[in-house]
Image (tube, rainbow, N blue to C red; front, side, top):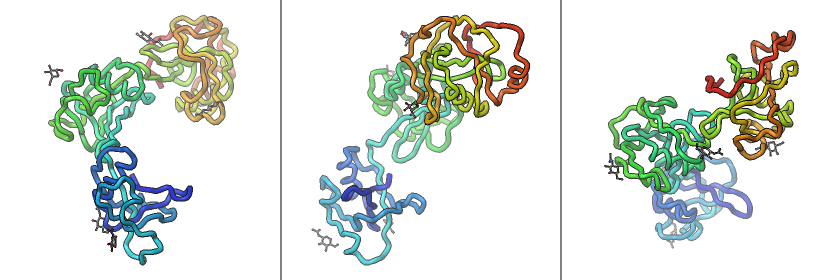
Length: 328
Ligand SMILES: *[C@@H]1O[C@H](CO)[C@@H](O)[C@H](O)[C@H]1NC(C)=O
Ligand SMILES: *[C@@H]1O[C@H](CO)[C@@H](O)[C@H](O)[C@H]1NC(C)=O
Ligand SMILES: *[C@@H]1O[C@H](CO)[C@@H](O)[C@H](O)[C@H]1NC(C)=O
Ligand SMILES: *[C@@H]1O[C@H](CO)[C@@H](O)[C@H](O)[C@H]1NC(C)=O
Ligand SMILES: *[C@@H]1O[C@H](CO)[C@@H](O)[C@H](O)[C@H]1NC(C)=O
């Protein structure tokens, strides 16, 4: 990214119109980010706006800090072309999962040389997925879907024929074709589902009412009603695109819960922007303090809202066991 320096407690810009890879190497060394892969000038929208700290940086390449290079202070240099500078270091390789629910399932993307790209599904399997899940702190791999199961990416396809043993620390430590070398299209993009993959749904067919359920460790389970507050219910509804408010379906008796009850004592606050930020008791297969302890929610965006709320259902159906219904 853009190079900035902390000077007397303020982040300041580094401007140079002759920025090169020798200068960039010093930045990468100082940040312990590996080797410099690219030195670049920033495009206009990427440039900084704050005060300028350094201008005209000339490094031999072996210096340990940028300030040990031959530099000019801004006031010592006449006005002229001076541009914010950027660096890509080799240590900036990253992996992420996109387009799934949560950060632990989705299409695999790797950040390399400053660009996000995908992985081709040729010989993509659970051992490869295992490395990704471990790397992301997402537990163990449960599935390794190919064929753009999580949608087609765009731009670079970085890796093909990935052949991890499963013990590697990072995906790019696994044997594979050289970076960018492949015979693939994006319809072959590889995906991963890890055990820590989580998802949220309301179980009724309209997707905006019913028992809140969460997916964890490969199984849908219930959320206990302990301390189910208005904030929690409205956050569930917002997250599912079901309107801004949620209400308990008080006219129904609590159903007896069967199947796993994953989450207890969920306490969302006004500041939380995602259900997964809410504090809750640790994940446990049977977590409700009381077994008959489950709330149904109806969201203001549900088309059942008026009907159910204004004319409460007369039947008393119990919460069915959690089963794999399509999520919202
Ligand atoms: C940055 O732009 C200057 C011209 O303003 C050019 O001389 C220089 O080579 C460029 N540096 C890089 C790393 O592209
Ligand atoms: C630093 O740069 C200035 C201006 O380019 C040059 O005159 C001077 O010799 C350089 N000093 C060193 C130690 O490289
Ligand atoms: C993958 O690696 C194993 C050894 O770890 C090897 O036996 C196998 O042939 C490799 N597969 C491919 C497609 O390269
Ligand atoms: C998740 O499932 C695996 C195997 O299915 C099991 O060994 C593990 O204990 C489960 N974890 C939790 C937190 O239930
Ligand atoms: C979520 O809300 C709870 C309760 O108000 C608060 O303790 C927690 O810090 C919030 N977390 C985030 C990430 O906003």
